[in-house]
Length: 444
Image 1 (cartoon, helix red, strand yellow):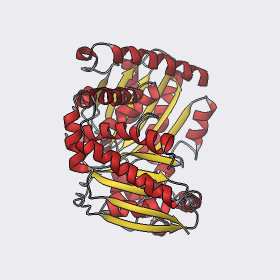
Image 2 (image 1 turned 180 degrees about the vertical axis):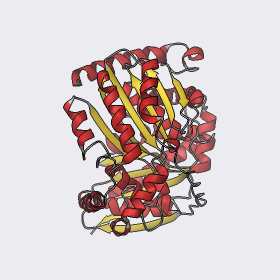
Image 3 (image 1 turned 120 degrees about the horizontal axis):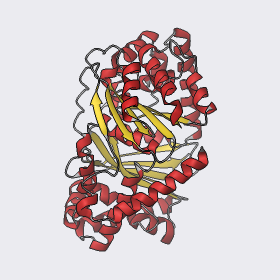
Image 4 (image 1 turned 90 degrees about the vertical axis):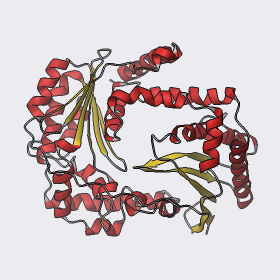
């Protein structure tokens, strides 16, 4: 199956490359694959996309449930539920779904984002019926026994403690997040805090599941070698009878982000290199300012020829690691930069170079050639979101959960392609200014 998937990826990239090179007037007005969506009577949103290229199918099930829905003092609850979704259900044993997918040569995974949780698996298409049955069974009757919950809590606390030991910059990242995001539901770690995890009760878990893991708060996306009529029948058979859940409460409105030269320093006994984190408030996702600032990210960070990679890593060699770009958390975002250096002098030089390049973008309009290069790279990354059946299922499910109307998905790329050099200069001035979050990481 691995060779089949590699061949499919190559085929898709060749196809999408030709799609990108076609006339913009036609290619950018639609997505290059079929799409059908509808809603069941119990509120479950269903998205189907047929692709007969290979005998594969991906099933993705997403829930509008994430750390944004955790209660203060109970951080990590949403992530705990992600793990418990593999603890078995009324008709499926613990980890049985995982072992079944592995046995037939498929792949599966799950991810908890700030405002949603997504489960997906790619299998030979003749196993679609079994996968849908198992997904419906855990949506209806997850085995949330007290031993299962306590076992999952212990495992999560151990995982979190191990992560803190293996990631020497965990503490610095936590500090940065608390400075950049004013609300706990945005600044708390996805995995939560150990003390909070210990306070989570079995009743908390069951209430969370009953509220958020319901069909009216979920999307089912099926992409691949399917017959649309038969697939709709299978969806009705396994999901239509699952009862609709209660009305999900409105999410809390985030406090206004205000950054006025917030800086802090932190000494780490685990860090092998000094460094820093630098951040700016970014515009909300899908706002008019978001698209030009995303292209600023590409100009500065994306690719070996990007301005900052070329200067800090290749030419000046003052940084050993460089990461940067817009981080989105629900309705808020931060333009985040993370740099590691060999010594304090190089750290200061890196910061000066970064601020210098940002200042150039604020004062000097970039050339059309450089802007087009950034757009071309972004366009390739955009297309990779649906290069395989798995990518496409995740892309469609995630887009729905992020409230992007499916009928308007093709407009997203157009918005990036319509950005002008003048708009990038204006946006850089507005957001990448002296109001910064800065965390100085020192070695103890």
